[in-house]
Image (cartoon, rainbow, N blue to C red):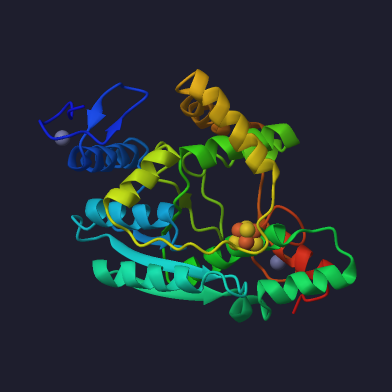
Length: 309
Ligand code: SF4
Ligand SMILES: [Zn+2]
Ligand SMILES: [Zn+2]
């Protein structure tokens, strides 16, 4: 099979367009699609300080490299990388190293922030307390909630004006369905390509890989020779996300384009839902971070296990 754009050997055929790509044309095409998303949705402004969340996994490495290629042309834009160390023994250490190396290679400033530093405890310690207290919350719940807050806090501290995360098409389609299945209408309002409006205290989050299927992100990482880490977090478990992923992949194989349809639909619906539910934020009674409730979810989960400082 030859590349549809040049005479080189193809390495991939898109199930959507039917076009075949050699390694070079595939990478260029993916970068071009990300650039189009950035422009079409006006994800960045000429003087943005973009903080890229880099875990060291494939999605975040692809995001960092592609954004560096696109945004380093603009002299007013600053790119910084941030890795969150949750504090899970035997996990993340090599991810942090990979993120650091990848940033250095590109000349991008890299920061690390840990749960221990922000919350006074590692995730291992928090989860051990949770088990002691008989809490029903799983480690991943603490992890997700506390990571989001850590990213926002550090983004503000660094003076970032945008926070970019490596969520891909598969992640986004799964999140939409999970929230629908749970009836979480309020959350659906926040699942567009960028926040429907600015909330004081939140650095706006953008997801430039939102329309790139996971397998294409993985192929880009592979063709670029990115070093990836192998360790699996010890708290990983079969979650609802896995069931939804499996269902979506099965449907997508039968009806290509379904994941795009789900994400495209929420892009159109999110602003309408936002108008309807009108979520307003106020400072958390405990930590002062923005929240729609009296006490933010991170403080709530820490309080539940008795480690709120
Ligand atoms: S598996 Fe759960 S605890 Fe581990 S890094 Fe992922 S979200 Fe965090
Ligand atoms: Zn080619
Ligand atoms: Zn709080």
